[in-house]
Image (cartoon, rainbow, N blue to C red; front, side, top):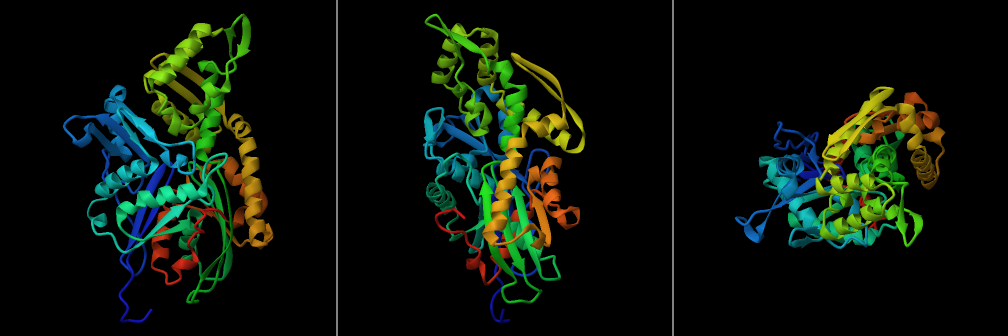
Length: 440
């Protein structure tokens, strides 16, 4: 870069299903993470959560908060709040039109703008003057059985229009790859595996020697809508839903029928579970309870919905998952209004529950290699990132293919934003931008 050219300032935004992170650069040197105010002290990780409550003293009568502040508001007043987490997971879902929040209906992009406003505000001074170069991560493949990438792109565009800048979208694992490559001193072929809350994404990059004009060249990518949230759903399915009537029966005109699985589908998706507390759903559950062979089980399901127990349940699920990442056994203890669970769980149990998901993740990984025209033996480095990369069974999947010596990890929650910010300084940024249609 000529000496007369001003340094490029950039911001990298990792808008995640579970957590969001922002990194920034001054135009030279390394990127630094933005620290966000939080009730328990500043943190570089901002929870992807929203809380809404009615307040006639604010414009429109609907107050809101985001991140850890949303969690704090919800815990203070759960009965009068609407708590949304993982709302990114509906970005590519055509069936999602809006969230019903008391008397308001908010579309995805409106939820996203509320989230961004609070995130920027809690980021304080570092985010008051955004640079022209903004790089936003996006999944290789969005969550859902039939995701609509064009719809997701339109919703992202409307959400990030709040920033008033051109947005450069880059596959999330490519951001982590760019940051990892900055620490390499020799040419290499690098595979990055990003395990987020909603998706598992893979990108392969050829890294040239330091000083090369275009040091990193993307070779191939693949992704699947299976990650941490799916693993959480497996725990819910095994430990919680049987107590809420799943697998049970009900009586209809003298016949004994299985309770439809649709009654439990929202429990596997945190973004929908938080929206179940509405009159129509509760009336349906009351009718089911009257005809159920085990009405007490349906009463427990109603209690979960009425008492907004979803957040506490998923926190307990997450704690068990973290415990089983470091221990061979863990205990699932939950004590809420109308629902008490105390169960011992082994790591082997958990690995058996998620085995079908790991198989599909492995197939997607093989697809990434095929898209790059490479064999596993031709990969020099494997960088694992994202919260679910710490699950032993996930790591073992890579060790079997690549061996322990080629695998690296670290900064699991922040590596993507850090790399996106570094990429924002690069003169070849446009070479990294994801296709507009949103698919690999």
